[in-house]
Structure formats: structure tokens, C-alpha cells
Length: 185
Image (cartoon, rainbow, N blue to C red; front, top):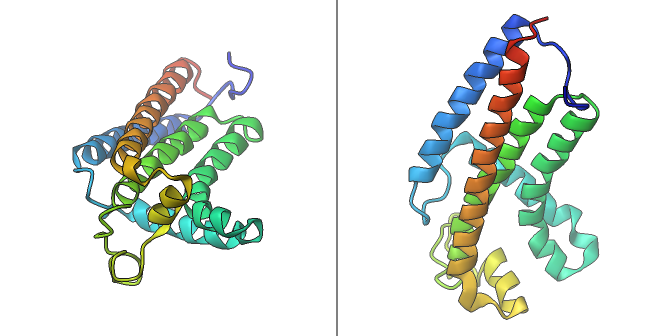
């Protein structure tokens, strides 16, 4: 028994978790099949966007660079904080695995944005492209770092990292359910 794991789960909760895990697996395949340049059209993209925009505000006291990076940083940190809270406070490794999956999904959500740093063709929140509004976050971030020429490689890296996190989270969630199946409440 994992020290962070509840010993038992009700049959209804077990079935609900099993259905959620199956839905996340199907959704994962759908995300993987989406080409790199396509921004999320899922409801999660809209949720991610809220945290992204909030990150700009929360990181504003730390200077211009962190204000710009703060959007993407917050988008990735929120699911990780949720995962840590579920694991450490609630002793719910299954819930934590779902949040790690969400973190991976955020990397996939950011990849097209990173990939567009030089092209600036992505339509942004205001309905205009980065070229029409003098750039966007990742163009500014990579320009300041001197990494603008690496936009495509970094985007592929974000996509790979997100994919690995999503798959690892599904495996973790499945292993939690496997252990809980033998110990109904």
C-alpha cells in the first residue's frame, strides 16, 4: 500500500474513476492525432486559457520577462499544484494522476503557440494574429533568450513532454485502480 493512497474506495467511485480513465485515454488519442499547428478546440483549452491569462497578472510584479512567461508557467503549474494537493492532503493518487494528465495536456496546448513564435500567424485571444499585434508571448520569450530560431524544436519538445506526461498519468491512474479493485469499501 502506497503511503499516499487511501485503502478503500466505494464501488460507485471505482466505476466513476474507471470511466474517467477510459475517457481520458480516448481524449489522449484525440490530442495525439491533432497536428502541431492546431490550437485546442476542446473545453480544456478554454480552462487552460483562464489560468494562462491569470499568470500574466500574478507574475507581473517580477518584471516584464516573468510577466510574459507567467502565462505559460501558470498554465502548467496549476495542474501540478492540484496534483500535489490531491496527493499530499487528500491522499488521492488517482485524482493526482488526472491532474498530471492535465499538466501534460497543457504542454500540448502550448506547443502550437511556441511553434508560431517566428511565423506569428496564430489567431490570438483578441481575434488578430501575432503579426498584426506586434508579436505574442513566445515570440517575446524566445527573442529575449536568443532562442527564436529554436521555436519549432522547443514546440516539438513541449509536445513530446506533454505526451509522455499524459501517458505516464494514464498508467499511474490505471495502476491505482488496479490496486483499489481488490479492496472495495
